[in-house]
Image (cartoon, rainbow, N blue to C red; front, side):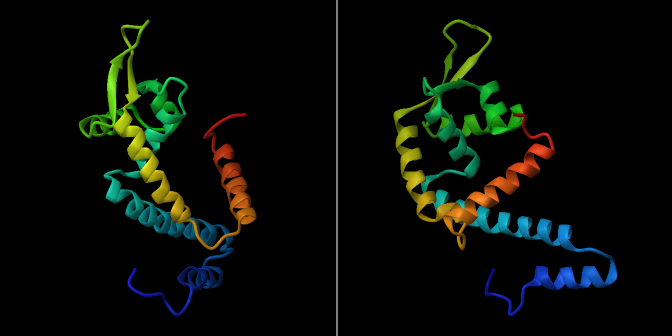
Length: 166
């Protein structure tokens, strides 16, 4: 975006919606979430680009770092990242091409291939983490408590739509 508008376009749209269509609360909330997603995506992409990563590839490196053995089957990666198998394959292909992960045979299941983070992958994840945490993952303007509240609210939506069970 080039420069800030002199008014809030989402609030203006909500007023018009209210006058012409009906209650605008949900429309304004969803439009706000979508706009904030654009803002966050732009900030995170900007922080990760110098490290040769997208957010999806960064998430995969973080996931592998969190794994006890620093490796996971691709199927498990897809489940945890909530991605289609084709997307996981594309992410792993790119990370492998960049030397950040490697595919290794599963020690007990010949049908399964593990994805293992390399030392270079660990280093890249560390430097990229510094970059995204320095910008608070692009989520600025909130206190720590507000960020927790936002997370709680978004979790309720995710749970209600069947994103996970507890």
